[in-house]
Length: 231
Image (cartoon, rainbow, N blue to C red; front, side, top):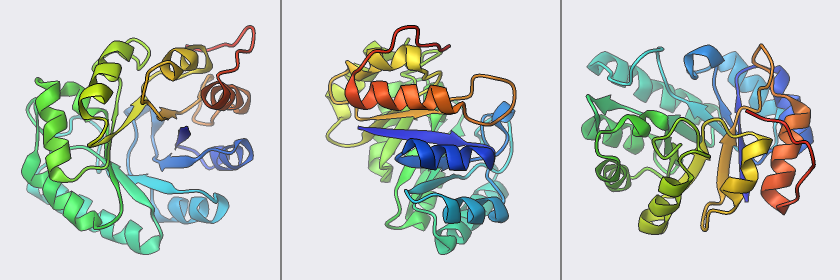
């Protein structure tokens, strides 16, 4: 059972290490949903965190429809971070309400043996099932999704069905509003082994250590702590 922490601020790195986070998704700009970090930020995280670090490959805020120049930028960013020690990558590219298959295949090929997570852009797909099949065919290792709901907890039923249909072909990472108050519900989904959270409960971009500890405890032990807070 794995917990991935979305890290947007250097202050979250030591918290992730103390709490025993299994993997970091490294980004900047929480308000914009995550952009690619600069190399100095990545280097400091790589030195300060002992478990895998996946890097967000997103050149700008806004939609996930990228120009040819932006796709080339993403390709070069993958190469730079791979050389610097990234363990995997998080990205997404669309054409309208469909997966941009050609661009995705190019980026997955560039990542080589390093795994690629297709992020919540998949939740914008007009045909969710078709989109997941395209991710599988393009070589993505996992998808990060709420099951097309506002939060992963609200999308629990669709997440469960997706894992039943595709769990032997791609890993499912439940993310979106994951807090200590919703982990027990997600923990009940058969076959769901990974959750994603920023664990941010106040203004700013630093993870709440107490909340993160609760999420990890609930997720890995099914224990319940009275009065768990969340959103």
